[in-house]
Image 1 (cartoon, rainbow, N blue to C red):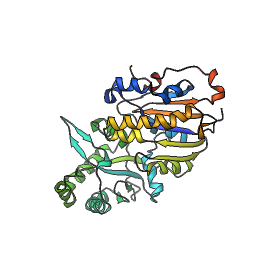
Image 2 (tube, one colour):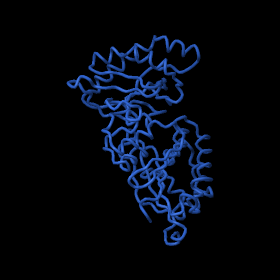
Image 3 (cartoon, helix red, strand yellow):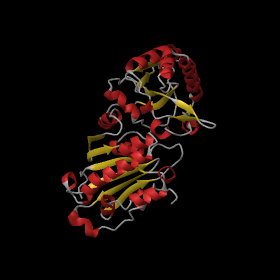
Image 4 (tube, one colour):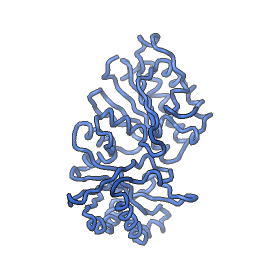
Length: 336
């Protein structure tokens, strides 16, 4: 099969049975489109969790390899290239942390509904704090902020974790590490204190909206290049949308409807999105229809692992080994 056949990447498709329910996942394996596809699918590569719970989401790990990005590249930070901020060193996001039983939990940023004006007010209020650290903060949009390092003698030396992996979880295991971890925590604490009494949050409380009470540092902006530009397009798309980008290995389609449902903590929405995928993309792949007539590659990704499948054209399917439809939906390395 040609290496240039289209590839479909589906983040959050290897769902955690503890969240979705083992019975539901077993039922998904019998869905007609998936059942037919799995009979013609061959696993060509996969990777399991390396340092769970704080490893990057599986789709981000796979994308770095496909796009030729450095292993430590932050995909969300590539948005700086699409937003016209190539001088930015880091991407940071305004977030809401809520208090769990005995820890802080990161809320889906999509629920903030922060306006551009409000974002500008909040950023302006804490800009002096960053300046004192030799840093410069810029709110380019409501949810995508950037930080540059004009003082070359005082760069931030951090190892960061992606926001998408931490949503809905105890943030302790997802905090930045490295030589400047304490310096960053101190700065964030000052930001939190400044925003606690800010007029924007006062208005948000009156409107029963979650307050903006912290910042999340996504990671460093990688150098410009073909892979980084493709990642930039992915990073600025609306959540839950379909996007296609060109790569050296052929067209790459990313469908993150399942990820949007997972970040929102909505299992029913996740199930509905899976059924829609089954009736459309999976069924078409199984029948070698439309753009999938010459075969397909399908990448399923989970919290930390991923599995890449090649789907044979109809003329070749009989030579392929049959796969367990349910086993293909289990994250590599996960206990079953």
